[in-house]
Image 1 (cartoon, rainbow, N blue to C red):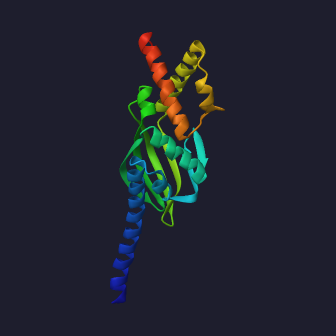
Image 2: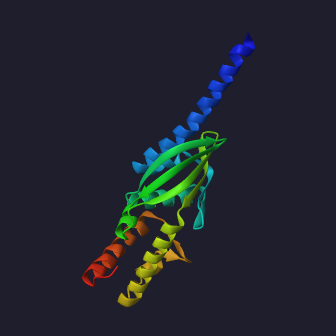
Image 3: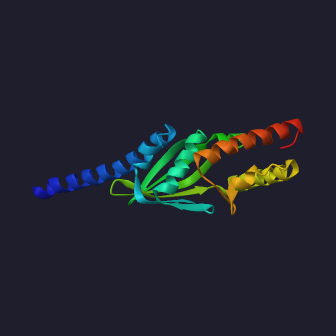
Length: 193
């Protein structure tokens, strides 16, 4: 008789734990989109690692806070779809929009899959896989920005990218938007892009 009740109880507990992991990721999506930096950070493990595959790896809450503040300044919006769970990992498709992408003519980027590794009720690691095509498109836009900056003698971009990597902060995000506005105005006036 005990066995009859034990198996359903174990299955119910396993389902509940798994649903909690997905709910944690959904909660992160909501807080990120509300630009609630401190509340989003509370969902991360202290030793959080975030890997944008082929681009960079950020470690620790300080670096993640810089990313969250960057995203807040750029009005970032994430949409999570197609959740799957495997062990401690929540897999989903992430569609990202923000003012930086919009300013360079990119409607959205897709990270598929994005993997959230959850342990003890916290997000321990994020692995986002952007498409190669979007990476190439962003690279082309950056190349065009560098050409424009040399032509116009505007060196702002040199303070926003160091050693080939963006500097992530609210302040640099705001400076990017000003720079991109000037770049777009120049391109519109000169009919190039």
